[in-house]
Length: 221
Length: 157
Image 1: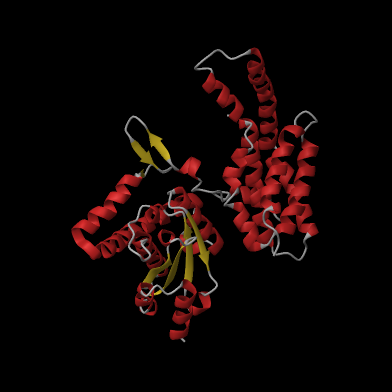
Image 2: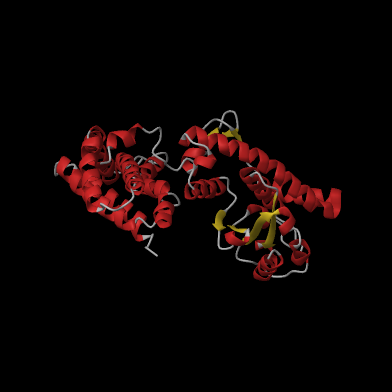
C-alpha cells in the first residue's frame, strides 16, 4: 500500500532546481544577475575570457596554465560550498544522501545553466579508480589561445577541487582531449592525485586519450 | 504565455493588430477560463486521482520494489503539475524545459519504463474519469507529450 498523501507530505517533489529559465534571474536596474536563492552570479563576456588568457600569458608566460588551474581550484572550492547549500536547501538532503543519478543530473544541469557547455560522467573505468568526464562546447576552450595542448585548465581545476571535496580525497583532474585541438569534446580523467600525475608528460607527448587511460590502468595494477 | 500571443503583442508595438490576429487572442482569452477550471480540478483532486492509480500500480507490479513505484508516482505527480502549468500558459514547450535533461535521466538509469508506461495509462484513465469532455481535451495532449519525452526517448536497454 502506497499512500499518496504521505508522498505529498515530503518537502519537495524532486524537480529540476537548476533549470536555466528559473535559476538565473536578473535585476536590470541594479545590473545584477542572481540565482533563484538571491546569490550573485557573474557573467563573463567572451572578450574578457580571451583577455584573461592573453593577459596571463603576457604577464606570467607558461605559468599562465598553472595560474588558471589554481584559479579553477579556488573557484571549484567555492562552487562546491554553494552547490551543497543549494542542494540541501531545495531537496532537503545533503549531497551524500542523494542517490548518484540525482547528483549527476543536478551537476550536469548546473554545468549547462552556467553556460559551460554539456557535461557527461563516464564510469566505465570506475573499477580501476578513474572517472572520465566528457565536456562539450566549452567557452574556455573556444576562447583559448593555440597552445598546442589541451587548454581547459580552469575546468580541470574546478573539477579537481570539487571532486576532492566531495570525496574527501586528494584527487587530480587532467585533460586529455580538447576542442581547441579539433577534438569533438574535452575529456578529463579524474583519479587519485598520485595515480594521475604520471599522465602529465604523456599529455605533453600528445598521446591519445585511450592510450593514456590504458597506460594509467596498467601502471596502477 | 502562449508563444503566438507573445509574438502578436510584440508586433502590436508597431501597428494595431488585425481582426484575424485579435481572433487568436480572443480564442485564447475565452479558453483561459476553461483552462483554469481544468487546473483547479486537477489541483483539488490530486490525491483523489492518484490514490487509485497507486493502488492499481502496486497490484500490477506486486514483486517490484516499493521505492521504485513511489519514485515513478512522484515523477507523475510532478509531471501532472507541469502539465497543468503548461496548459495555463498554453505553452507545450514549457514541458520540454522541465522534463528534458532531468526526468529522462532517472528513467534511463533505473530502467523503469514499463512501470512508468503502466502508470501513465492508469493516470490518464483516472484523469479522464474526473474531467468532463470539455476539460479533458485541454490537458490530454500535454500528458501525451510528456509521455513521449519520458518514454519514447528513453528506450529500455
